[in-house]
Length: 169
Image (cartoon, rainbow, N blue to C red; front, side):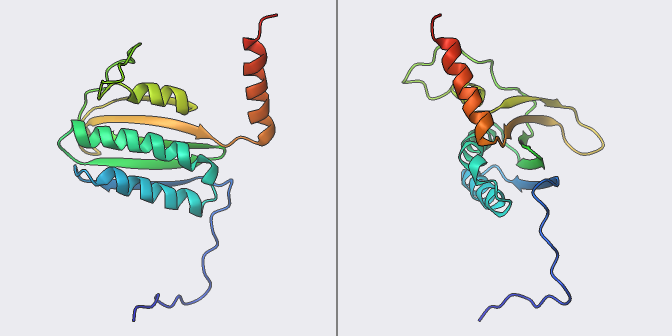
């Protein structure tokens, strides 16, 4: 029978919602890695009560982690950084090659070419760049995206502005 180890003294208090935190998951070039990254991400966001970001974060992290596994030969990493009200997730891999620019039209039969379009549509902000080899290890690239927690009023105003700007006057 397995039991949790006894903690002596008082338990640490959870990090308050408004305080920054950071997690990092390194993974090998293995087809199971994107699923492991999604599962870990979901658990972290649930523990920090950021469930409202979970669907978008999982979709984008899965896309970037899958690209890392499919297009590089080495390890990769996912980093989550919370700085209220923004969650930044970055995916690093050993390839210095940046994704190809966004294509205007992608056929329904194309197996590639949608990743940047998905980032553009779903993320609040995104970017990336090559990382040179240095003191801290190998080079490669990092692609990141940001998702912001919005209060209901801000989300409603954004939708209302989009609707009113698209109607003819």
